[in-house]
Structures are given as C-alpha cells and as structure tokens.
View (spheres, rainbow, N blue to C red):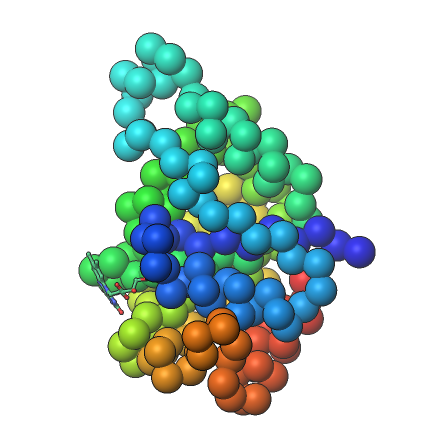
Length: 172
Ligand SMILES: Cc1cc2nc3c(=O)[nH]c(=O)nc-3n(C[C@H](O)[C@H](O)[C@H](O)COP(=O)(O)O)c2cc1C
C-alpha cells in the first residue's frame, strides 16, 4: 500500500485546516497525520544557516517525508497567500541536500476557510510552486464555509463533499 503523509500549513492550536486533514483522512486508508507545529523552526535566515546549519526539527521532517509516496497538505490562506509558517518550513527543507526534497512525490493540496472561497487563492499559489521541489500536484480541493460543512467530530456533513474528495484522493 502507498504511504501517505498529511498535515496542515497552520500553526494555530485550533486550526480548521488541521481539522480538515482529519476529516479527509477518514475517507482513505493508511494516512499518517502529523502536526507541523511539532517541526517548528525559526524564520529562515542565511545567517542562521551559516552559523548553526539546519534546525534539528527540519532534518527530522526531511527524513520523515522521504519515507512517503504521497503528501496531503491543507493550507490556510493568509492575505491571499499560503501561510508564512508553511513557506518557512518549505524554505528550510529546500536547503537540505538540494531543492528537490519532494522528488517523485504525489501531492494533494487542500484548503479551507470560514468564508466562502475556502482559501482557493492561496492554494493556487502553492500549486504553482510545488513543482520547484520535484513533486506533482495530482489533485486539489478547497472547502468553503468550514463550520457549516464539518461537524465537531471532524466529519464532513455532505455526501457531495465526501464523494468529491474521494475522487481527488483516488489518484494517490
Ligand atoms: C493574517 C490573516 C490573514 C487572513 N487572510 C485570509 C484570506 O486572505 N482569505 C481567507 O479566506 N481567509 C483569511 N483569513 C482567515 C483564515 O481563513 C482563518 O483564520 C482560518 O481559520 C485559518 O485557518 P487555520 O484555522 O487552519 O489556521 C486570514 C486570517 C489571518 C489571521
């Protein structure tokens, strides 16, 4: 069976994108969910890198990622862009053993927000840069109006969303 890793690009303890990851993982077998906050790192700086190298957490995350065939990322949209938190993690990862740290990895990009657009603008920007790291985006899904569409147990309310997401996940 293919190995699938999933996480959100949020550093909020109440992240709805992390909750969305949990909701989506109920639709497909064998997904390992991590919390990216467990791999927190300082804001990328060439000075820090020159002085102390890559943060231990980034090296751990890098090694973890290499063991997976596919990755699901649900990223919040901050001012029309993916979060600085996710970008920072990706910047650090790109400094270890070359830029292509996601070589031959399939990626499904998700996003959700309390509002109607579901973070689709930020997702589109992330989709545009994923190939820099050697990965292929095989599916995307933005879920608007999170609090109407996901219950307190992180279950998607509508069969329509469940079926649409299952179709996205089928290619993994
Ligand atoms: C700095 C900031 C900027 C935001 N910008 C957007 C935005 O551009 N579009 C949007 O749909 N929501 C925006 N939001 C609202 C987020 O969608 C909302 O905070 C959401 O809960 C973030 O996801 P998370 O809970 O997984 O961190 C913004 C929130 C913050 C704090």
